[in-house]
Amino acid sequence: MVYTRKDVSTLTRSERRRLVNALLELKRRGEYDEFVRMHIAYYAPDGEGGLRAAHMAPSFLPWHRRFLLDLENALRRVDESVTLPYWDWTRNRTPTAVPWTDDLLGGTGRRSDRQVMSGPFAYRHGMWTIKVGVTDSAYLTRELGRPRDPIALPKAGDLEGALNDPVYDTAPWNSQSAKGFRNKLEGWGPGRGSASWRTHNRVHRWVGGHMMGGASVNDPVFWLHHAFVDLLWFRWQRRHPSARYLPAKPLARGDAQRGRVIARHERMPPWGVTPDELEDHSRIYRYA
Image (cartoon, rainbow, N blue to C red; front, top):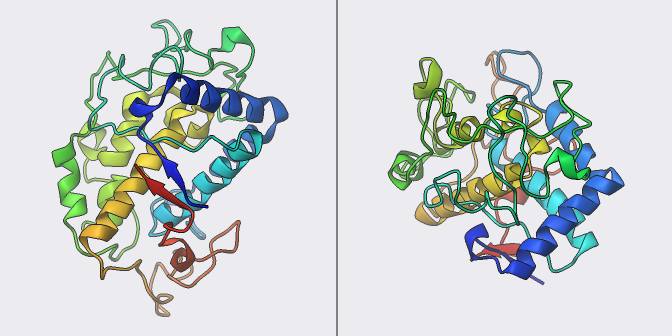
């Protein structure tokens, strides 16, 4: 049966409570930390050698689609009424808007150490201890808006350049791809600092704390953010109905990216599914 993913700002009080409780239960069971480990393992920048599956590559979108489905299925094993909501950061743009409420994700971190003190995922409640990460911090951290050096969330207009691009991805198939929907949405831009952080990447920077880096899954907002990214991929597909995932075939011998990116019918680790199999989600879920 096809289920629906909703805008997080439209969830009822009961839906918010069920989502939070399911996340906390996965954490209690130890299942949640396995998702953190997986994301860290596949967070490979294009400056390193070997296959890139999750980031800085064409498979960024299908890889995260499958990743979200795994988490969503785990949540639904706890409570079958739960689905992943999405956070539309072009509309809910302030540190006090949804989802940063006490009954959902809590708010920003305190000034001294960025520790989240409010909401169900605050360390002081004893139900959300960081056990897998790239630092020794046991508590969840955030710095919404980065007040010491402010940046703003992307606006709807900032997405148009990505949504209007009729090509899914282009050479060199990494963070340097100047054209193509994938990298324009993933958000790797030229230069340094805040000007180079666009769309998806800028949101990670705006949240700050644990959302900056491979251990970003430690913050539950990761899932709401990527559900919206997934929705944007769906909107791009509707805008360009004949467009497909690229590259369609493995890259030619001699291409510097050969063996480093996944073609449409090649299998993505760790699941062994192909981007082609994940282009259409309509038989599994829809967006409200």
